[in-house]
Image (cartoon, rainbow over all chains, first blue to last red):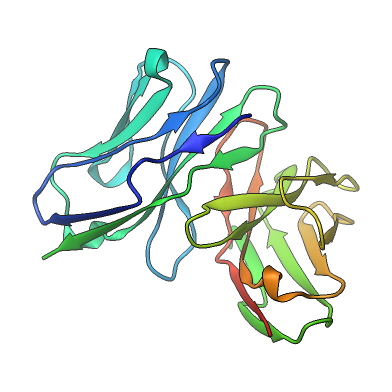
Length: 114
Length: 112
């Protein structure tokens, strides 16, 4: 079955620490990959996306993600987190031939301590 | 340009009551989606539409119906609400298959 797995459910970091959130998907075909962020009380916003080309993708607010096809992974990174990065982060995948449906991971709650 | 809007923002229902959630987008997007968000489960697709007059079932369609009479609107209906439908509901739209989706602000529904 097509699925997305986020390994870290709750991450707590201090400001200026580096962040890496894991995301793996289950299918080996063509995929479009996304990371969304949901700040407290707000709706989902697109952080970054990967369709093709350079597997290292840069998004907004200093986030980046690397697509590793051999590992079916699309991990999110940020070199130095800020308190304002406290939010829930969702990895999502669109599998080819799936009518554009996003399949979401369970989400990772990031808490950044000042 | 408001993007994707949802009404209402909050609602409390009693078991067995019915209601309709409205989603509207002003980006002329073909594709629209309804999700529910529950703790620890991410977002799950309820129903979606690939164009005006079309609807299709998603991952968790039971207990919900939808209609897309106008391109800009996508309605989600609960005919007989159950406590298991307590959730936050998000609507989204996209211009084409495979592209990222734009999300609305959500509707928090509580069924007592």
